Amino acid sequence: MKGRLSEAKAVVYENMISKGCDPDIFTYTMLIHGLCKVGRFGMVKELMDEMRAKGMTPNILTYTSLIDGFCKNGQMEEARDVLEEMSANGMSLNTIGYNCFVSALCKDGRIHEAMTLVDRMSTKGCKPDVFTFSSLIHGLCERGQLEDALKTNQDLLLYGVVANNVIYNTLIHAFLKKGRWEVALKLSNEMSFRGCALDVVTYNGLMKALCKGGEVEKGLGMYEKMLRENVVPNNITYNLLIDGLCKVGRVQDALELLKEMVHRGSMPDIITYNSLLNGLCKLGQIPEAFNLLDRDPLLLKLLHRRGCSRCNFIDKLVKKSKELDAVRFVYASESVNKIPPVPFLKASRKG
Image (cartoon, rainbow, N blue to C red):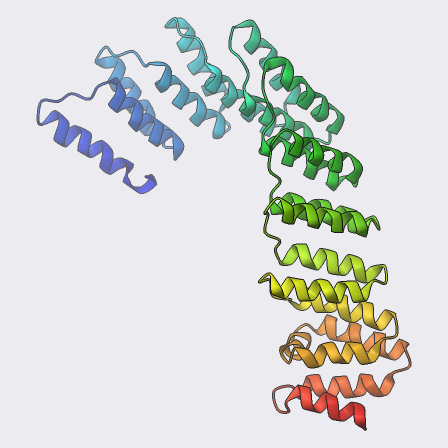
């Protein structure tokens, strides 16, 4: 659309007018809507002037397109001018128009003004909808006003509005960001109760917070719930849980989860192996760490490319008084493109 607006305008004038078909209010509105979306306000003004010169009065759709365009472009004064013109022509702002103002004010951090405008909507007989409250809640969360955001979410029912996935996800991620996973967990339960489906991003956020707080068992419970809800786990899901299990010494459980990860079609990466190698070395299970390296010949290449990962593994070996294994590992990873890594590692442990 962006590159073809001038062409569209040319079609209107060259084809329609040449055939005796004058553009009507609908045609002008469609063009204005498209031009506003790409910020071509100079052309918008030309079209508005032409409409007025032809005695046409913009309709509610025309005005809403203008307000939406100006608000999204941060031109609030111009949007207010349109609102005044609407009033002069005997038209009132509808919910969509109010939402444009509310969204723009929230993005600009002017939450109090946005909330005042929502109150005004009701007095004008215009009912706020889920998009109105979504903007408010997002704005409040962005400013760290989480308690106000929660209260606004509770107030939805007073207006007959039911929170959707967007609102719940906004709240959940805001509370997780502040480390308040208990509230986030409660919101996720409320979300499920109200028939809103959690997505993989929300599940991952919850599991990350739980594992970070040492609540790995609850994180695994969230994983089981995820599977029951037919939400497909991704690499991030498994990496979070594997890392969480390894950090609390449950490396065998982490290895079992690794098998399930592969079985479900997710491929382990350097992050997965880092967690497992660190977990095994921390428990002094150096042979098992080398077994893990043996099972995936590509892992040595990954470790070689990620110097920090390789250094971490070497450091773990040295701390466990496994200097010889550390030297062998360095030689194997440096020679990975010349000597097949699996046979070499097996031979090195015999010597």
